[in-house]
Length: 423
Image (cartoon, rainbow, N blue to C red; front, side):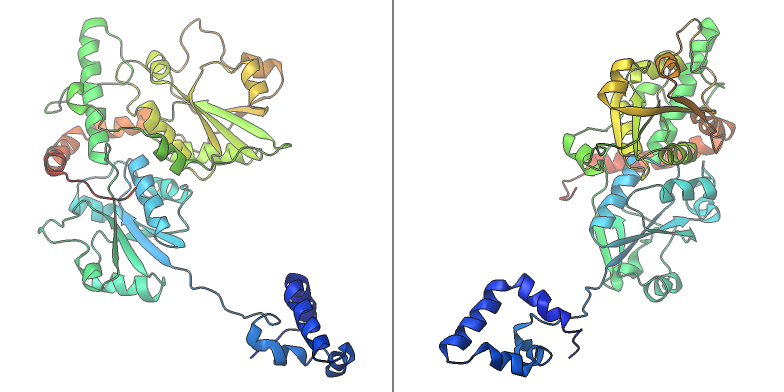
């Protein structure tokens, strides 16, 4: 048995004064003097009282459970974030595998976002500890052994929705057979398939609008085979509990430097992650204002936003660089806002949607500029919500074909859906 120096005795006296005093009182009642203990010396006391477990420190550390979850994470949304939050709750450390572009093409069709962009999105989530790039779509025996032996993974996690390979077999069959598989609840109301459908529908509606008044918010083209926007009503039902689960639950300290940045944050992408990272580095607390659906629609046109206010709020809250959000922030940053939230600095990225400012509209940052607390922040990436949508437009035939099959699976899922416990 190992013991540290005699200073651990005094630790015992400090943390267990009543017990130590009781031992001394017992000795006195038995007619033993304290000099007897002094004669023994403190160095020998730990051996006499070691069975009490007080005067020695066990060098024992609980094993940390490592869990693994993989995915394509294309057009990443709050459903992905919630899945990873649930996965993290099943262990201590979460390792996430990001499926390679080649594997996505072979199993699902062309990805919208590049591997670099998807890695940035996954790494930017507050629940993720490690990321494995170019993970396989199916858990092969070789890869599973690599997870267990090299990455020290204890359990492989996936949602309760089926994940089938093109041949109809279960992608996680080996993990289940090994007894190292755990399941989480699918997040209702959103999927990458649904988002692609919303984009295709909004662009079709925009084209129809162009034929009437020549005005558009995105460069539209005729999207043969895509459905109308009414066919893509969001299934998302926001709850206060979900917001609490995503929130840090902490406010800024009394002397914290609060940085404020606002925007639509529609189709949350790698550019959003990087600008939020840059903004957070300028202070101690990052407050993000998320504009209402009405404000976004007024400034970006029909079909916007693609994601609704609460959906966008959850995506931003999931980012590890964000401390708090204002759900439905006003377009203009007012003096009252600055005072209420004790804002030290207001920032805005150099890359933004081209039509984000209406003609003749007052500068939304006039107040912070007059207070000399405004700063333009160089956007690390040029990607925008519009540029992401344009990628889908450029390959619309492939995405319409991909979505037709997946939409049927989604429809079947909702038709046969049963209650599954979890959060």
